[in-house]
Length: 267
Ligand SMILES: Nc1ncnc2c1ncn2[C@@H]1O[C@H](COP(=O)(O)OP(=O)(O)O)[C@@H](O)[C@H]1O
Ligand SMILES: [Mg+2]
Image (cartoon, rainbow, N blue to C red):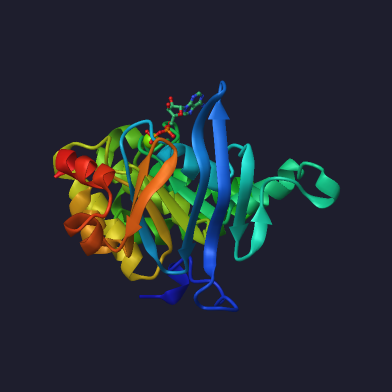
């Protein structure tokens, strides 16, 4: 395949084992309730990390903070060693323009697709390019078509979300994230809102991306996917990371009682 169509394969880092995205001491509270308690998490270029955990444990919050969709209370977010979000020069909050530019590096795919209902698939995918990157319409359309092709939906480019299945809508949402050429792609339970028979087509697209070297953090309940595709699996509970290990070890020989208890419910 054309390597220009593979996002996330930016220039090689200075140290190949250095994390591409790293959070240190990430903390967040809502209404005085601590939701993330000093989380350290990192991912290297080309890695796939699966994040499991019970509902309400803070998984979505971690992804939203990493994607700079809301500010952390404490902690640092580093992309290739450069601090994202937070404070700019002389401790002043960074201007929105700077944050908007930083956000382009971190793509996000949501549980409920979040497509614009009044735009076709192609225009949903092209919108970020024209609105955020200032790409010319014709060029944006061509790039959108290439990404729809990538997720197997070029033939649906002119359809509106309501004319697409849930699985197709989620693949459009993945194309929309990919077209921005993110360094890291975050998935927040991308198949949880889908009918069971539509889950496979979305997981297949994600597995293909992983094989192409995309760096991905995937919050999911799909244990088989995590075992097959992830390099590492992490269990979140009550705002902390309980356990992180290679899939075989995580699923077959978990060290923590909490992990065993969680797995007894999802297996
Ligand atoms: N915007 C918000 N305002 C208030 N509470 C929130 C908000 N977002 C998340 N929470 C709370 O934070 C906790 C963690 O939520 P979340 O990160 O969505 O967990 P998960 O994705 O693991 O289910 C939950 O108790 C949730 O109710
Ligand atoms: Mg969630």
